Length: 124
Image (cartoon, rainbow, N blue to C red; front, top):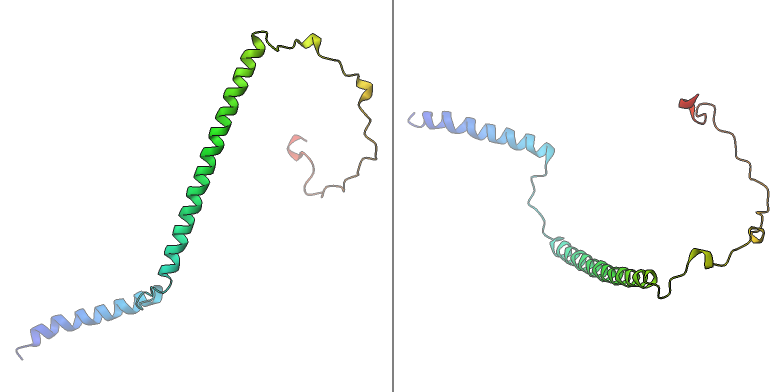
C-alpha cells in the first residue's frame, strides 16, 4: 500500500502516452527513419547544384557578350552620327510597292462559335 500514490500518478501517464501514440500513428508513421536513399539524395543535390552553377556561368558569359555587343553598337551609332558612314534617309534606295507579291490562296473558313460563347459578349 505504500506505492498506491505512485501507481495513481504513473499509470494515467502511461495510458495517456499510449493513447497519444495511437492517435499519432494514424497520421504519421512511427517506424524508425530509413537512411537508404540518403546517399542518392545527396548525390542528386550535388548534381543539381553543379547544373545550376554551370547555368549561372553560361548566363554570365552571355551577359558579358551582350554588354560587349551593346558597346560595339553604341560606338557604331556614334560613328554614324559623326558623319563617318552616316547614311541619310533620302539617299536610301526606294523599293517599289509593285514588287511585293500578292498573297495567293483562299481564306480558311473557321468553324462557328458555340452559342454559349459568342464573340465579345460583353460588348453587345
